[in-house]
Image 1: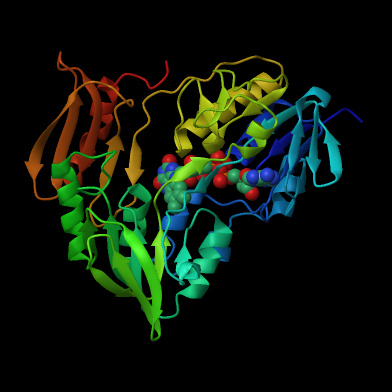
Image 2: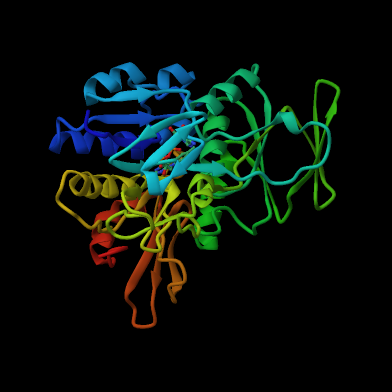
Length: 382
Ligand code: FAD
């Protein structure tokens, strides 16, 4: 048998690449390996499912068996790749070896854990995959008091979703306002107001320091001395690209696994894409970049070397309380926010010294300007 193309990871990156590859090559043996159940789902729905009353199974659109059939592939589930051996073109799943023609790492990212004292650490959840979602749903019994750590994009999406599902939500964050990396203060204030109208309460300038049981619930002590009662804690303090396997195999790693515009890692016949990859210096943990990367890499793996380019990639934030679209400026881009509008209708433009548009954040009615403004933005990676 020809040696297979092996893709490690069955998230959006792994499965999208497999689909794109099969459009171009129907015969090369293809093996996908997943540490989870290998079910196909769109990860962004994890932060909109509670409000819709969906359980984890309802978020799944295809089982691993069905994906294997569609892709003409073998999908190995609940199997963890434990070691890479690049010189031998071999990977290890525990004590089982698997040789490859080409290897693609689509390992995703893992939630960061903030240090919290106290004996109730088991009541802190993070939701980054279907198993996590299932665990959190099982832990929530009836209307609950939920404390969210982190007021970034994901923390705010969960705040909106869990409040819509009837829970009492409080958010604690060390930042001065919500989504500090994405929004100027005025737009953040508009989103905050809309979430507060849903019942969400924010505690800025503080972190959760200590969590202990008290009666049927929990007592959370914040760094500013305040004390909050809650039933469980959802941690949304950030994600870190999964780089451990690559690092152990001496592949170049920075924030993510370092790859060039052809998605090539620093050893031959190994590629990476999705949340785990840092593509030509860009570590973008969103869906649109991984779709572009999957299309380019599929062509390369089918014999037509193709560099990936990123166009303009705005992100729709799933806070229905206040519709929001952001196209963040490239990190370190020099410029200033210019904000117009009132209430929840805000238009914020990030302009450089010559008045060129480098990014935007649009809330409420202003989201209708998305396309016109996107046309004025420079591509992220031409
Ligand atoms: P993952 O989906 O994490 O897949 C990683 C895969 O690797 C899994 O199958 C895992 O089992 C496997 N794996 C890892 N290690 C091993 C190993 N050693 N052996 C075998 N298998 C392994 N982006 C947007 O653009 N818009 C949104 O609205 C949006 N909303 C989001 C909401 C939430 C709650 C979250 C968490 C993210 C959201 N994102 C959003 C980000 C987006 O979902 C991710 O960028 C994308 O899904 C990442 O896909 P991936 O395939 O790279 O990683």
